[in-house]
Structures are given as C-alpha cells and as structure tokens.
Length: 416
Ligand SMILES: Cc1ncc(COP(=O)(O)O)c(C=O)c1O
Image (cartoon, rainbow, N blue to C red; front, top):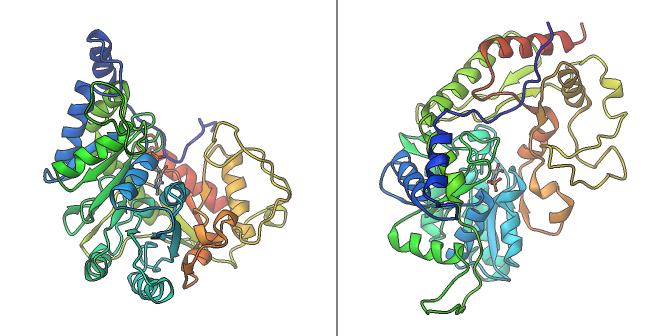
C-alpha cells in the first residue's frame, strides 16, 4: 500500500489558530506584543499550574539564553549542563563566553545523573575555586528527569536550576509539571514540538519580578527614558502576536496532543514487545514519572542484523538532520569517531525507503568537536545509547495504522 510520508512529529492544527491570527490582523496587532501574546502567556501559566509567570519568546533557545543572563552567568563562568541533549541546551552558555561542564545521564530516564552531578559540582569547586553558576537538566524526548534528586543537590550547593523542558511540554513528575521545579523552566514551540507557534518558546519564571527582568532583556534592555538609553545588552526575543495566535489555538488541543503521544508510545511498547533485539525505551515503573513521550525511542542490540547493514554508511547524506533548510556544510567523510552502529543506520535507511522518518538519538555534547575542550563528567551511558538508539514517529499526525505499518517495516527489516 502506498503511504504518505510519516514524519517524526509534525505540527497539527486545532482549527482555532486562524481565528486568533485574524483577530490580530483585524485589530492591527502585527507586532511582537499584544492581546494574543498576553492571552497565550496566561494559558501557559494555567497549564503549568498557575503559580509561575510566563514570558513568551521567539525560541526555546532564547529562553535558555535569558535564563542564564538572569542567573548572572558571565564570561569565565561555568554552567553544568546535561550532555545528552540537543545543542540549544548548551550553545547559549557559549554565547555568554562561559564554559559548559557536561554531565552524563543515568540509564533509567536518560537524563542527568544526580550522582555525577554532585561529583561534578565538588570537582569544579576544587579545581576552579568557585561554584558553577547554574545547572541545566533536560527532559530528553519528554522523559521526566530524576528531578527531586537533582533539586536536592542544587539546593544543597545553592545553585539555580534551569530546566530545559523544550521537549517535555506537559510531562509531569509527582503530579507537578516539568519546568516548574527549578528557578526557570524552558519551553519550545518549534514546528516539531508538542505544540507549535511555528517557531517560538517561553520561559517559566518564579514570580512577577523575575518576569519583568526577563522582559527587559527580551526587549533590548531599554531603560526608562523618552529616548533609547542602554546600560545593559539586551536582545530582540519576544514572540510575535501572530505566532502567539497560533499558540492560543494550539493550547486548546495541548492535552489531546500529550495523550496522543502517550497512546502511540503504548502501541510501540505492545507491538514491539516480542521482537528480540529491540527495546522500546519506557519510563521508570515508579508512578511519579508521567512523561509526554514527545518522541518514542528504541534501542537495537548490537547483534541484531538488519538487512543491508553492511552498506549502512556507503553513501554520504546530503542534507542536515531535521531539514535545516539546506544550510549545511558537507562532511569530509561519512564516518565520525562516534556514530550509530551499522544496524541502526541500516534500519534508518530501510524506514526512509518506506516513507518513514526516523532519527538517531541526539549525539552527546561531550562528543561534539565544538565542545572537545570542555570539562565532562562521564559514565558512558549517553555515548553507548547514541550508538544503539533511534527515534520513531510519534505525534498527533501518526495514526494507529501508521504505527502498525512502522512496526511491520521494522520487523521486515530484520535479517532472518
Ligand atoms: C532539548 C532542547 N532544548 C532546547 C531547544 C530549543 O528550542 P527552539 O528550537 O525553540 O529554540 C530544543 C529544540 O529545538 C530542544 O530539543
């Protein structure tokens, strides 16, 4: 049966977005502020429990950047960040001239290992004579981290936590929304996220005063004068009132989206249960973990043979992962010193031929050439997961039929 291409996580509209956008045009609020921005922030505030304040921004990356500024991070400082993540968790540390200190993951949630976190803090204090300025744990693929343990350590050393919940929108830990445990929480509304504003993000702030400070830096740090007066460096990071209109429409289906991702995860768990050599990554059985399963992930045993795996890296890819508009540099070689096993790449290629998008797990930051000189506290977990893991389509556009088709293609790809 010919199928339309199945994407990892495609935007899905509620049908209400255009009404909010139309209102913005009708009232001429075509600027990066206005009624949609305010109402979207209020919707988000309620969604995360009603106690925190929200600043809507142009990207999740901007939210991390601003949270670092508000945490006092400056050139020469160090910031602890989960290594197993997308580059946006750590790049803003570099924007500020500070140094990321990478901490590996524990094997259960794939997120920041609390034991290594404490080891890293102690060692940085011994080696540099000062504390890291902030800690950035990540909710990778939406999975709740062991945030109680992380918070206990952060509080003990009095270091602010910036939770990167870009992928964890709607995930909960112990009944509380991820992104509301630390001082700041980061959300992303990029096109592939749980909800989208086409591009956008938000920072969850502890109170109105913190929100005001973030707004100041998000609007080019304008001092209170009748003319432009600048005493600090600020940024143009507010969300547009048009994009916020999309966000308001998306908030009407946010809970449905989360439920759908969880449903797709359950289907993969059931349908792949009897496939030897493939493990669907689940959340810990502990009831406190209530992940959104933004992306469903599997790991492949090294011994599992996929048809065609001997030619897995025979051809160079020509585009960037995630379709970054073709703005890529050609690689010198099809190999790097740390890459997914041949059976993982072979399965990706088989799925691709069948019209299914899949993706290797995120390559840990401590293995990225751009970060080769940064301190890293490692236990081997993220590196070994990167070699064996991949992400499968999830999201509201993935139907039950799609999941069955994907699982069928995976089963067919295994060499008998
Ligand atoms: C873990 C993580 N952090 C931060 C971001 C940055 O979000 P944005 O793309 O909205 O800048 C993303 C997603 O893109 C992400 O996956």
